[in-house]
Length: 258
Image (tube, rainbow, N blue to C red; front, top):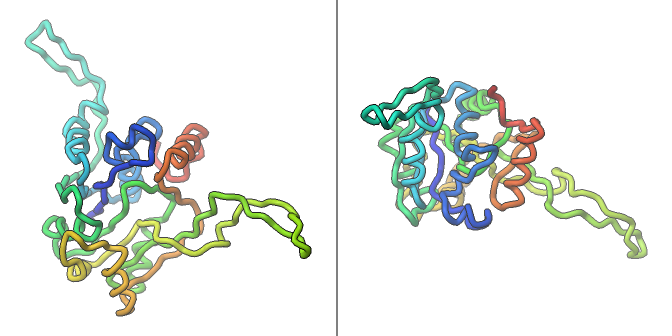
């Protein structure tokens, strides 16, 4: 099964580096977060990827065109006709299709543009800036059981701010962290979609999370797989620091590979 990853955004809120790279190419632990996402899917046996490129898409293309060099030990002998010797070849069992889906194209439009690469088959899809410990096989089984056109993974994010507890007379009783079950559910990505989804994506201006999802809801064709464990997006420098710290501590829930 193919995995579609939306990688067209710009990380404008991730310090200076994010404004100079596609957001999925901002690194955590020395590798782009896009790489972490792909490694996670690969752990579950999903090794064929379609990357929807947009802002500075050539950076993503250059990364994969040189992936062989990035991940191997190599000697360049310039005294011998620029000879290159590969000592250790570390490669992934991946097939990666990189598609220019436009600079200003919205999320639904990007997916529409890769229709010919997906074909007439169910596919997985996620955003290029979030990681988690979702069991992808269980997610897929849930999608099949529900029988809907699309299934999203729903999570309850914890609040970024502490909560104030009050006494009955209005005095401050204390402070506490906002629990994850204090808020509503949000779409965390990690979706499964039948090819019928393309019928709901008319053009480049189509935003997947609005008109298409609303219509699917009206028709009873959108399912939600509730995930109660770890999920984290990388939307800000603070988010990136959280992810870096988990990797540094060896407690990154999404890192299932050696």
